Amino acid sequence: MAGEPLYGNVSEPKFPFKLVANKLGWLAEEIESANHSGSCNALPSMLNAVLIWARSRTATWWTNDVYGINETLVSFLNSILEDVGANAAYHRLELVPRFNMFFITCRNSPRFNWSTQPTHLEIGQNLDFSLQAMFSKTRAPLVADFLYSILNVPPGDRSLLKKFLSTCCMRTRRVSND
Image (cartoon, rainbow, N blue to C red; front, side):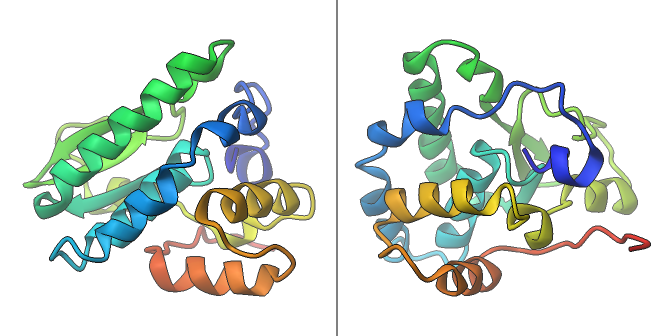
């Protein structure tokens, strides 16, 4: 999804927002419970996992203290994709251990570098999150409405969502010549 505005990649199947949205009633409570898990990384890591699942990020990279909570979340999210059928399973998430930490990425991401010993540059390229891509004119309403619905955020204030994402998510901006 971020691949289209950032890289011009239109060949991947679109994420099935409409098919999965009604199956996520449990997600807001699950993410809220991360606030009480004892790890300061639980909440942002889970929010990033949802963004990757919705294909707004290539990957995220976390310490192993939140592996278990994310393994459970990834399992639930992947089972939803299996349930809705069509091409949805293309967007399955995977946990990828590296250097006593782990990435979360889409199993079929054309941008993720699967090297077992990635360099600093390759790690940075895997973390190509861009708020600019997520909030492009064509993508913003779809992603914002999706996140509003699953996180129970009142609609109408996109600046609230931007602030929420910028404070909760690890950001690595793609350098461009624009």
